[in-house]
Image: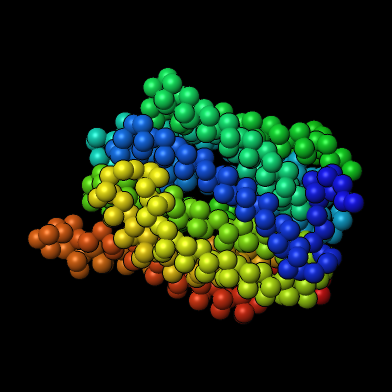
Length: 463
């Protein structure tokens, strides 16, 4: 009989059938990503139902700004996961311990930077992207609470990234489910019970994230059979800091690029008025769940590739890539069909406004086919990152977001202006997005096939 402890122990992905290891690792991560998505989704449902459509729009227009200001954590988390997976695969206890310790230190630095700068930049950025005066105060309150209380968010993401790098995606899942349940209860309590409005959901999210981060820290402290976690290992040695930045900054820059593109397009979205902003929120919430399998398989492939590159098993990396890609594309195809058939019921969860539901479903149909393309992009990018090549996915993101999506969006808006649509047709926003996804999948497949990622490992002499 398999003990419960075994499910919560680090997983060695260098042995066994690749597809089995990928699925074993992906399922808890998928459930966890869905739970993570529930944070913002529950916020949107509670706000939309109990405060109104304009409040829902305020939260939606805040998200691109939030993503931009939290990119430091993406950089640290990505670098952490790659370093940990490769050193764990190589069975190098000292380097593994130092990598984990430095990630914890760097997270504290990044959190402090965010806390200092956020009060000075939030309002100007919201004004810059044409946030309507009717919702800008709510948007500012929501952002400031989340950013000033970013410690929970940052440490949960970093520590859960370390756990995933060790092959343990189940522990972080359990802690996240607990925090998600708590977030839901607090959302209802603060908004419905205390009538706190938009600030109430932000405060609930902060409290829940802090609790999940504490659970992750306790779990890591107990894993002393795998690595050492003490103050000496947290000293920011130059080599490890540079390795962390080398691996993490390209992914952080990818998120900067993505966030800047979102903000640029959000500025365009805001010109269509509050109804379309609210529509964009609803579509992106459903989109978040539809993308979860793709993100989960992408992260699973990063850990899988990292461990096998560390163990010098490039043959397993390529076999696992083919198997993981087949699974991801199959699941994304199924999800696309479900969205097309049952999408309207999902939209009704957020609002009873018929016009808003109709508009949201129309935009969702435009996006649906793009999820299959994103399965290809996420899996192949995950493999390249796990092997240590984080620069290529960064450049591909730059190409598909800034040089494809943004020009297409603004170009279509310009070309579709009319008496009925003086600012252009709103469909342009989503047509540009799905076009970027499809082109991104083709370009990513080309660079994966080219194979330069094979020579980027921290562990040298990969065979």
